[in-house]
Length: 442
Picture 1 (cartoon, rainbow, N blue to C red):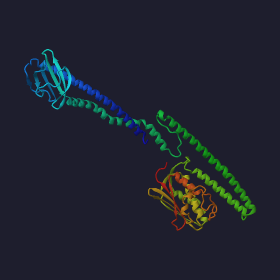
Picture 2: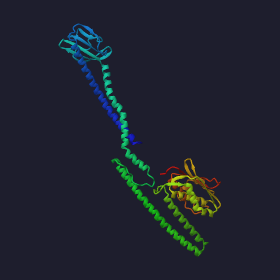
Picture 3: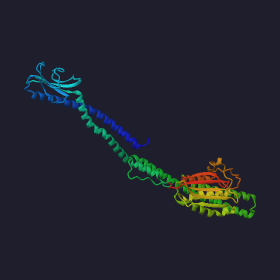
Picture 4: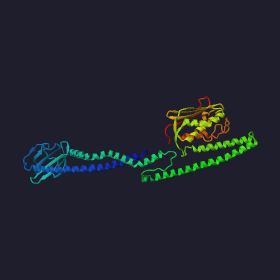
C-alpha cells in the first residue's frame, strides 16, 4: 500500500459508485415503469377527451391531423364494422381487437400502444394509440436527465473525499514530519495538538521508546565519563612508577623501554576507544554548529606543530574559508587522526599537505603525505576496527591500534560525508579526501 489516502479514496469511491449503480438501476426501472404508467393515463384521458369532443360525429370522415405523427385515433361504431372518424395518419382497418383496455399492435412498421375505450353514451368504440419507441425515448430522456446529476456528483464526491481524508490524516502527517525532522540529539517526546484515538497508542509507545533511549544514552555517557576517569588514572600511576624506575635503572634498560612502549600503547588504545565511542554515529549527544574547516585546521596544526618540527616534516595548509554544519569536537578528532596518521607514517623530512576547498557543491578536506601509502586493495579494510596494515609489526615502528581511520569513518558518517582514498600527488604516500555536504545537517 503506497498511500493510505489514495487507498481510502479509491475504496470509498468504489463503494459509492457501486451503491449508486444499484440505486440508479433500481431507480431507472421504477422510473420507467412510472413513466409508462403516466403515458397510459394520458392515453386513457385522451380517449375520453376525444369521445367528448366528437359526441356529434356520425358520418365517416377524416379529421385533419392535430396530433403528432407518433399517435393516432379512430372512432368505430358499436359493431366495429364502420369507421366513423379517424386522424389522417390512422389506418382504415381495425388494429388489434376492439376490447376495452390497453393493447400492443403493429402498424406502419412500428410497435404501438393503444387504448380502446367503450363510449356507452353513443354506443361506439374510441381507439387511441402511441408509438412505443417514442414513449420509451421520452421516458428515458426524462429519467436520464434526473439521474445525470447523481453520476456527475461522483467526481465532486471524489474531491470532497480527498480533502476530507487529507484533513483526517493530518495528525499522521504531523507525526511523520516530527519524526523525520528530529535531529540526532533530539529525544524529546513527540507532541501533537490533537491526537486521534487511532494514533494514541502509536504516539504513546514512540514517546516511551524515545524516553528509554534518552535514559540509555545518558547512562552510556556517564559510563564513558567514568570509564575515562577509571582507565586514565591507572595509566597515569603506571607512568609515574615507570618514571621512577627509569631514574633508578636508567633509560637504556631494555625492559624499561618495552614497559614504556606497552604503557604508551595502552594509553593510546584507551583514548582511541573513548574517542570512537564519543564520535559514533549512533550516539545522539552531538551538537551541530557552523565550523570553518580552514580555521579549524590552522588551530590544530598550530597546537601539534612541535611534533612535526621534531621530525623535521614540512607541513603546508592551503584553501578557502568554507563552513559546514558539524560537531566541532568530532571534526577536531577527525582532523587530528588524519594528521596523526600522516605524521606517524611520513618519514623524517617528509611532506604533509592539507587542503580545504569547495568542490561541486561540497566541502573537500584533503590530507596528503609522502609516506609509504596504502595498497589500493587495502582501501576498504583499513576502516575496519582494530585492523592495521602489516599488523603490530608495522615497518614504521609507530604505535597504533587500528582505530584511527575507523574513527574518521564514524565521524564522516555522522556528518553524512564520504571518504576517498588514493595515491598522493607527491609521488608516493596516501591522499585522504573527506567530502562534506555544504548544507545543514540533521
